[in-house]
Image (cartoon, rainbow over all chains, first blue to last red; front, top):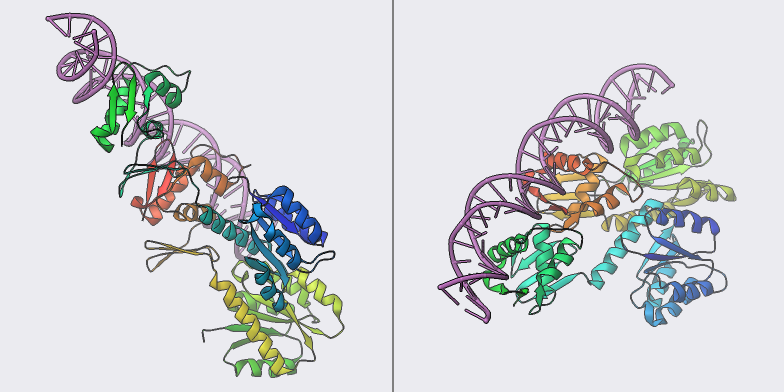
Length: 225
Length: 225
DNA sequence: TAGGTTTTTTAATATTATATTTACTTTTAC
DNA sequence: GTAAAAGTAAATATAATATTAAAAAACCTA
C-alpha cells in the first residue's frame, strides 16, 4: 500500500483514539487535531489525502475549517468528509457548500467508517489516475498491473520478457547495450550465458512483432515504434 | 414497499399494542418482544431492519440487549433506536456506546414515532444504496453480507477465500502481485508460508471456475471475466 | 468449556512454465 | 571470404506454482 495520510479532527479524544486506531490498523498514517484551527495547520503541514472533520468543535467549527482548507493550493485533491450527528441535517447541506465530499454520521461504526474511507480513497485514486503506464506506438505497458496491450490485444509476458520489453520500450530508439540490459534486467551479480538475451529477444519478436526490435550488431538492441 | 420488519421491544403490553398497531398500519411487519432476552432471540430469528428497544426492561435491559444484538453478524446494518423516558439522559449516552443509532423519548406520540421510523428507514436505504456490491461477469460480490452470486447460484465462501476473490475481482484483468495479495488479504504483519495463497486460489478455482483465475508466474494472479 | 466442525496453514511432493544453455546455423561487417 | 556476432530450435535446468493430505487454528454448539 502506498503512503496514505488521513487527518482526523474531533474535539473528543475518545473518538480520535478509537477511529485513529481503526484507521491505523488498516495501514493508514493518521494525524489528529482537536479543533478547526489546528486542523488547518495540520493540513498545511501534513498534506493528508483525506480529512475527517467533526462539524461541532470549539475554536473553529468544521465548516469553517473546511472552507479554509479548500483554499490551500496543495490540497485541491484532498478529500474532506464531515462527521455529523444523525439528524443534524443542516450540517450536511452547509458542509457540501463548504466543499466537503462526503459525510459520516455519528455514532460512528468503525467498520462502516473504514469501508467508507476506503471507498473515498478509491475515488481519489481513480481521479488521480496516475499509474505506471507507458505508451509507445501501439503498445501500452502497465507496470502496476503487469499488463501489456498491443493495440486492443492483451499480451501476457513472463517476467523476464516483461522486464526486457519494459526496459527497451522505456526509451524507444535508444540502443541498449547488452551489458546494460544484463545489469538492469538480470542484475549486476547474475552471470548468464552469451545467448540468453538473444533468446528472450526472439520471444518478444514472436509475440510483439519482428519489426519492433532492431539489432545493432556489436552493441545491443533497440525498440522502434 | 419492500418487506420491512420492525422489532418492537417493551415490557408494557399497551405500548406494544398501540405502537405495533400504528406501524402495522403503515405496512411494516411488526414483531414484538417483552424483554431483552426475547428481543435478542427475536432479532436472530427475524432479522429486522429496525429495532425499537425500551431501555428499562426486566430480564435484560435494552442496553445489554443492544450490545448483544450488535454482535450478531447478520444484523450489522440493522438500525437500533431506544425508547427512553424523558430525562433519563444517561441512557442516551450509554445507548450510543452500546451501538444505538437513535432514541425516541416517551411518552410516545404515535404520529411522531411513525415519521421518525420512516426517517430512520430512509437513512438505512441511503446507506444500503452505497452498498459494497461489485459485479464482474457472472459474479456478484456483496461485501456487506459476505455473499457471492455466481449467476443465480449463491456461493458461500469462507473469509479468506472471500477476501481473496473480492480483491482479485475488484480489478479484473489486473495482475495482483503475491506480495500485494498478502498485504491486503492477510495484513502486513502476518507471515504465512509460501504456498498459502496457492491453496486458496485452488479452492476458488474449484468453486468459481478454473478459468477465472489466471496465474502469472513470477508475479501473481489475476481474475478474468 | 469439551467436543465436533469448519477454516486456515503447513509441509511434502509433483508438475509446469520459464529461463538458460547447448549446439548448431545464419548474418553481417570488414 | 571469413571471423565475430547474432539467430534459432531443442535440450536441460531451475524456479515457481499446483496438488494433496494432514496438522493446527479458529469457530460453534450444546
